[in-house]
Image (cartoon, rainbow, N blue to C red; front, side, top):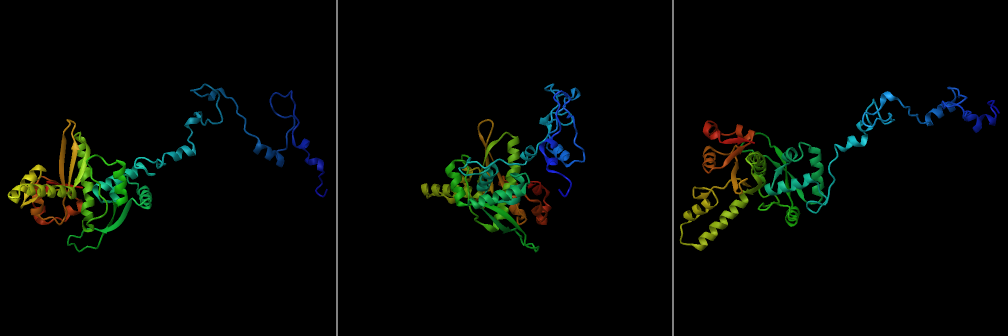
Length: 346
């Protein structure tokens, strides 16, 4: 051989150390040189032995320390990679509750958007997703692919301001989502669901109703109220107009103003300038005593004048306004401290 070795140098007998059955320590009678490449291979493929040490016993099992214990702690205290990942995982989509592969957050999103018609994406992220916008975006894409929601970028009201055009993103339900929620019986009793965008110019104002609702719902919950139903002005106006029509049809000779006053009283509202004053939304809820309660809320904007706000307060509505709109109210309203004290921030 050119390298000075014979084939017998690589035989199995020369690779394995000689074993001595009488050696109880477990060590071999011969040792491979530490510089030998076969010694390195042997160290890599030989599993480490577990040595019993009475000082490192588990307090729970009183057994010897195993290879899965670190620093004297039981193996169950050692975090595994799959355990660390489970905390950030979300619940898988299931067939419940509306017959599609859907998560609980997505289900609540559909219900909230349905009963308020339009909600800003930023409000959905804060209220339903605890500020986790990426998760919301992921779910919105899924719901859009399923044909259940629509996202639109709309202009913010300018109210005669000269500043640049600002926009916000809003979510509405599709007719398919409206039909799906109605057919599966997941809508609370007495709650109406809406789909589509009716008045884009009023979308920002309408989207703020959801913010006012959240604050008012918190107060209702503290008082023991439950099962809050939302009746938007669309529904209230339709019911009032129908009631007026039926009353005039039954008694054509009765004065129209008298009919409207009676209808307004039936609905717990007031007549102003020969018109029934209707709030942006009425919240109805169940009381602990078994009865029902209600509160009428109105979202004011910087376009409201002094008389407009005063009329809403006189009608018994609870007024809310955004911080930006509150700062842009006219001087006549700002100077009326009694009137401004009736307006709550959202």
